[in-house]
Image (cartoon, rainbow, N blue to C red; front, side, top):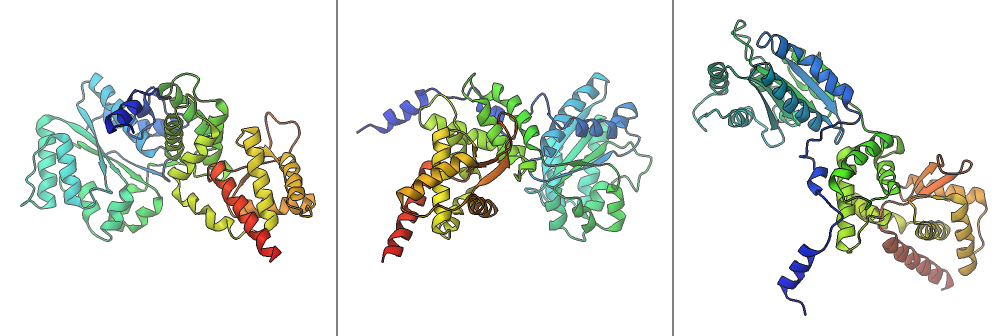
Length: 413
């Protein structure tokens, strides 16, 4: 029996498909932002006055988009870059990023801002107005400008409904209109509806400069993943088909989430799956395993499958076997039907006609057991392609075979 030291040493010394896994993490700031160039340009236009006429006005922008659409990384990359460019122009500018999921009250936000700026504020004893004044005074003393990004701004607004907290934050210069405007804002939210929760006097502050981040398409996710893979993985460990498969799973145009963050996490988990099996390359089956880990709700698939009828199950088993035989992410409906006919013979069941088979496939697609798409590049003619991403095929195959045997045994009684 191996000792704990031997087990751990073996894992630590084993080769990995990863060159630098951190390049796939949300914290990493890439050099390029594929398909967010327009949003980056909009941010630059919104804050141009901060460089050309610093202190003249308060610049503010709202970034809106669902989870994983690039709002945070775009804001961080912009903040880092414009701070560097400002320095080249002799302007002292610091970007501050505050997560409102963690800091949900105005005092917490102000303390976070002060900490990032290196400004001391007593933990107790000051009102929010006094805390804000202390920050403004210190910025003036240092001749420092700042862009404050309030991420997950939805949480702050929903945690302080109808309060004057947001007003205090964004209209700090109202009482001193001639004071140099050193604080600027980026508000990051998942929906523009959050602005409806603000008081009218505050909501007008947000009406202009809303930059939207739509969900990524499969093609856009493919570009993002392709950008990161050479940085994160050793050469040749990931086939292009694997990358396209992940992009198709999550692309908004393929009924996926449109989330780059989810796609990157699936890629990380797929690489870890390859490493755990001591394999020097990533497969589509690794992606299926990763998909279940990243989206645990897909593990509930078992309950859905148990409700299927016999021929749905036979067809599902045919899909699984065809996918395993081909080693691809998607297979033709014609190849599936061939396997379905063979299984009907093996289990002594009368095979269903093509129109009924197609109905079964649409049923299982609507139940989110399988995915379908129309064949395109790389396929001769048009055909329905079928894939399964919700579970490892070996595990799913055993479960479906078990259910078929149980149904047949029940019919024999």
